Amino acid sequence: MSEVRVKICGLTREADVAAAAAAGAAYAGFVFFARSPRNVAPEVARDLALAAPPGLAKVGLMVDPADAALDAVLAAVPLDMVQLHGRETPERVAEIRARTGLPVMKAVGVAASDDLGAIAAQARVADQILIDAKAPAGAALPGGNGLAFDWRLIAGLRVAVPWMLAGGLTPGTVARAVAMTGARQVDVSSGVEAAPGLKDPERIAAFVRAARTAEAAPTL
Ligand SMILES: O=C(O)c1ccccc1NCC(=O)[C@H](O)[C@H](O)COP(=O)(O)O
Image (cartoon, rainbow, N blue to C red; front, side):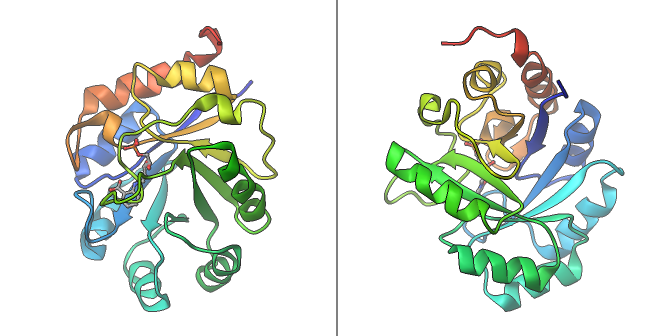
């Protein structure tokens, strides 16, 4: 079986990009959302993206972006994928995919079994699905909250496109999460931070190592 692929999201400094690459991450995520402590301006993200070595896919995260915002980010930053983390409908996901010409990963928030239907609906149009913890009502951010959901909800779930598990993962929990859900890709942000928006290279390295030991981890 191939190794679990890791996305480190919310990178704000060149050192964070270097740490993700050195640890063996497959994806680097840049957040374009003004209220986030991980928000990066397009010109900053451009420098970060240009610093990424080949093999590290650059993912731009946006929340319900208007066309003008999408165009501005895409014009400045050489991205490999767009991640949509708002309330985008499948129709809007399809539009953004056509407009940008890039693969799109759509985040779906999960808190209960009722939330799982959206995964199949979005998988009809998106290239990948990010299965994340649903942000609590009133949360300032729609993601990156360091909250996990009950992984048993998606144990054995079949998704028509590649998918990634996210939500409150840490170096200490990721192996168990992978073992319980069968995820082959995982995404982390706050679980590898020293402070909001500042990644910790040792935690990044520990996370990637732990994700890859998942096959040996005990299941439920
Ligand atoms: O990280 C943010 O600040 C953010 C802001 C707005 C929308 C989404 C955001 N993050 C989403 C992610 O990429 C996270 O990787 C995912 O939600 C898991 O985050 P965490 O629970 O902190 O690992």
